[in-house]
Length: 376
Image (cartoon, rainbow, N blue to C red; front, side, top):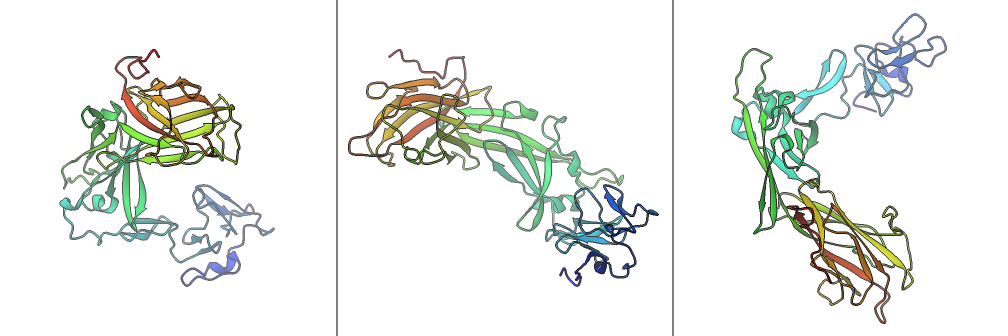
């Protein structure tokens, strides 16, 4: 049951239109075509479907609306998914859609337009209340960044039962006018830009000036990641890294792989024999590979998962330490991936080995500036 609409078969849903045939009826032999609707192949009479893809097909004849949970057409207006609290369900040329409720922000002011900034390793995002922008007649489709040729790459989403517009930006130097600042003291990097929201001009009357919303994301250039599990079993683990500004995170991943192809991580119980080769890979979702390199500054193997406990030093200052364990670095400080190979070992009277690495994003000033400089 949906509201006051109840049905057991599709035809019983269409109150006042029960004379319309069902598409599957042999006398109708109907079909549903995107942008056209559902019609009988015999006489082009509108028909009622048992099911339809609402995203591509206006399932029901004009004046009727589709209810997916009971698979029927009804003359009761229905928006799927349901509208946010600041929207209303309206009939737009026979299609039910969510539009902004003009009464929600009737007493709001422009100062209520406050962006929300989200930062991750793969994107920066500026979110604004959609209906508040429409209240002051701003043109959402025309939003752009400092580079006017870069539109806002925006989409609608519902947050806290309110309709928001999220504009996406990439944390890359020079992207759409991005500016980048590196703080060598705090070891942070900041990407900044401006989102411009112009007023709508379709009515011929402009009541708002252009919005200029500066935004930035600050990230730590140092991080720590670990396998977070023993080598029996060996499993992949993702670690979310805290940032200096508290505004964004990088994601670093350490995994143990079966072979030097680094494509098949251990994901099931696996007991390794001392002396077996083990392939360790560390990666990040950080995108600015033209400017930075990922570098494992220090890696330690320990019999416990406590970083404060003493262990065997594997990598120091980006260089392999081969006094106790046979280790070979394949990539470190030359890309956004770290790869090294080691021989499996065990601690006396212990059956487990944990790995912990301190990792940093190293600014690339020369081709070899982030690589190991030691000759030992």
